[in-house]
Length: 354
Image (spheres, rainbow, N blue to C red):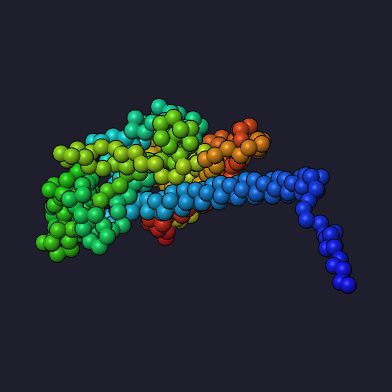
C-alpha cells in the first residue's frame, strides 16, 4: 500500500522583517547624506576654483590691455613730436577743442594720482583713491588699409608730412609738419614726392580709470576707458567703454628719464605723480620725460565667498611722497590678488636713446 507523504514545509526565508527594513533604510539614508555632503563640498570647491580662475583671468587681461596701449604711447607714424613746443600747463584731457588736442601731442601719457570722483569732466563714477592715466597715440594701422577702419568711420585724424616743400617741412614751422583734424576733408599733408597725400591714421586719446560699478548700482568695480571719437555731424564726443570687471584698484608709477639732464631712454627715477613738482611748466616737462610705467592692479572676485573675510593689506607701488602705497584690509567676503607689470614706452624711449 502506497502512502503519500505530506509535502514538507519550506523553511527558506521569503521576506524581510520590519527591523531589517528599518536598518537598511537608515544605512541608505546615511550613505545618501554622505554623498550629498560630498557633492555640496565639491560643488563649492568647483565654484571657488571658477571664481579664482575668473579673477586671475581678469587681472591678467587688464594688465595686458593697459600694457599694450601704453606701449603705443607717443606713436604718431612718421612724425617726431620732440620738435613740438611744450604747452604752458598740463592740458585738460577732456577738452574737445582741436587746438587743445594739438597742444597735448607732446604729452604721450598724463596721469592723476589718487584721483577724486569729480576730477575730470569726461569720466564719472571714479573709484576714490585710484589712479587715472591718459594715453595718446595714433593707430598703428593706416585708415582703410587691411583690418583698419575706413576714414568713413570717423576721426579725429592725423597726417604726418614727408614733403620738404616751403609750405610743409621746409617752412620751419612745426604747425605745418602735421595735420590733426576732426574730419578728413581738412587734411592736406603730402608724401615725400609732395604730390601724393600722406597716409591718414586715426588719432586716439584713451583715459583709463576704475569705476565703482560695471552697470549702475551693481557694485562691481570695473576698469573702464573713455575714448575720444567723432559723433554725428563731425563733432567730437567721449564714449565710455567697460573693459574688465572686478578691478578694484589701479596705481601707477612713471619712470622718468631725468638724471643730469642727459636723456638716454632709460628710467632714472620713478614717481607716482610726475606732475606734482610745483609749477605747471615743471609738470609738463616731467610728463614729456616718461619712458616707462609700472602697473599695480588689485583684482577682486565679482562674487563673495561664504565664510571668508579679506583681512589682508595690499602693497600697490609707492605714493607720491615715496612711501609704500598700502591698501588697508577691506574686511569683506571678496578675495583679491595683486598684478604688477613694468611697461617700456618704446616710442619716447627710442627718441631719447643716443
